[in-house]
Length: 88
Image 1 (spheres, helix red, strand yellow):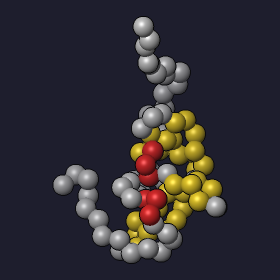
Image 2 (image 1 turned 180 degrees about the vertical axis):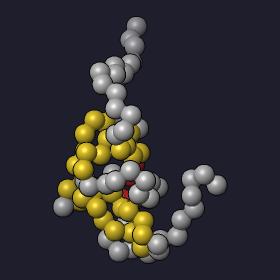
Image 3 (image 1 turned 90 degrees about the vertical axis):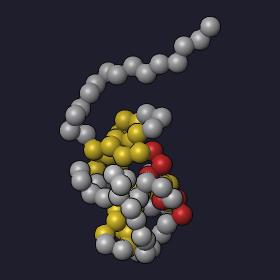
Image 4 (image 1 turned 120 degrees about the vertical axis):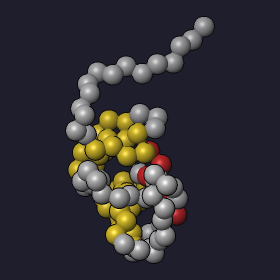
């Protein structure tokens, strides 16, 4: 028998975290794409703790900024996008 589990050793409610799919590896390092109107800008980030679904962002992204989560690996800096809020 085996068991898969996750041990929480520290909890920070103020941490900025994003879905793992939104973090993309580029030559510049790990990046996310921040939505600004109808364009995205590539933002280099520093990551911290990771789970299978989430990545903690230590620097490079502020809480509340809108990022691309689906299809981020297909984007480049300055790409034009259309989006729908996840709430709808």
